[in-house]
Image: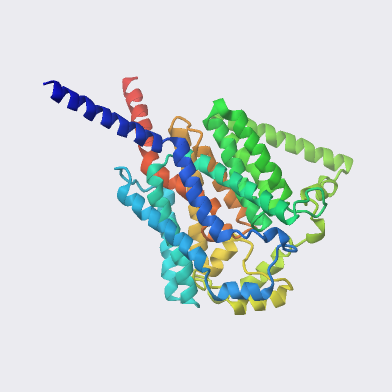
Length: 456
């Protein structure tokens, strides 16, 4: 009898030990570190160049651009294949759970399917297939790996990746003697183009600000991380990202307010704006002229009335769009060596992207693809707002609200939405994590609301 009791105790002890180990592995910090390592490693291989800060004006010559367009990067392809493999293993070995498709992911799936179908009419089917496989691998990795995560784990991971890229970037610039923030024309680049670095720093800033709401006991730590990330964001001198972050923070604040406060705040803001406009008209004060240098962040010599050359570029690209307005040239297929050369000659600067996600999407996937992209972003913003309101105001969903708003606004002047990137991947991770582990919270909240209504 004693032997049976001893065996039972040992079995229970082993079970408790295994459960404790599993809880440790699935703790928020460990999961966040794993996610940060996975995404950070994959996109570091795909997007970073440790010698970027040595480049003058961070612009590649036309030969490098044409070489990039002619063939794929093997190391980049292996990185995303590895991500897909991890995703598949996670789907097989992950915790038991049901994946509940939400509205944003439905539109994302439509966009991905349309991109895959574009292989049939692409002007360069090989390039389209390579780029599409990268997108598919990223999607599989996100959906599979997100089985283990909550939305707050994704938010913390986004902050950790941004901080890691910042540390690596500062280290690279110090090593090459390029870290000169006291010089007037300095732009912080680190290991990637300043505009891409700015996007990562902006997303990290929004994540740090959100984590201060998620973990109020550690808010000073997260606010310090936010201040550091935003400081270097300003040093990139990327106007679109730097200007959009404060607006995104305003959207986050607005989303967390009761409806009554939103209406009152809108009325007060409108009153102050009207009063300020009246003051400017009476006094002759021109705020745009007075603060233009501040708004241009010291890059006024690059900017005329054409958004740093974007309007002439878009005018040229509209001619190409008119050739295939509905279906486009195929996902990732427009920027062939021939098109890069033609546009470089026309614009007198080397370019291999449209500098607008919506123009880029129209080039690759036509009006249908651009419409799907736009609807996806609007649906994601709306859905995140609804979930935040219904899940007892869980603050981690503010990251999706602010992040998507940032991407929507930045998409007007940058092409980051049309291809997998660290910024968009974390938003996709958050949506997928909600489908695996967050949807039930919404269902429980709705049931509680119905039960409370029934009792009353």
